[in-house]
Image (tube, rainbow, N blue to C red):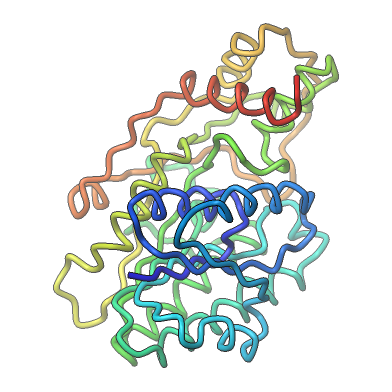
Length: 324
């Protein structure tokens, strides 16, 4: 069976493609290779995938409908894992149009693609824990109201969920949204805190610690996330619903304080962090904490990787990748 993965050169897309290929599936990957972070890292991921049997890559922007249709034409796609998006909460404050183009126009294009695709069995797509906004009642439940986003990125992800529900209702397209919670691990994103902290700690540089380290994050190791993504994408809906659209939290269900996270990084790297404590950044939230009861009950999702083990793997990869 052929899976279409959008954002295949991205962090989660790369790992998802690797696991599917290891299972003997065929993967058509598309990505626009934008320069939000260094393209060299995306190309290095693709180089690893290029050596795998059953992988095909097409450079394509999902916001361009005709290019998107051409990329998948005749490829026999039956399942879609839609991960392509303009990422980053803080970047959305300075570059709003990038989010409208990729996360809104691009998502509608993917829904239209799915609508007209013969024999499509399922489309799983990336949402985000940021849709919960600044809620302080923890943990976050899928049934909680999520209509007060504090960043444009979060607003676009909530809009994606609403549009998906509409398409599932109108056209009976089987769709599943996944609210990711702070994914980390090897081959990760340089704009994420665990990457920048590791880089600066190893270099003896000062790290900027927002809200003085008094923040909670539900750090989720990438292999655990991908196990859940693939199980859902390959199984499809397990609920009998008139409108075949479900949204799940997919996280670690074990939030960690940022101060503790830094302490583990210090232990793993063997170096003391030089800290600059700063107030909360605009658009950021003080805590994320996933209730994963629903995804555990429906799909047996259960993260297995603790933070120290995950950070040890990341730092080991980081040192190898940069020849340290």
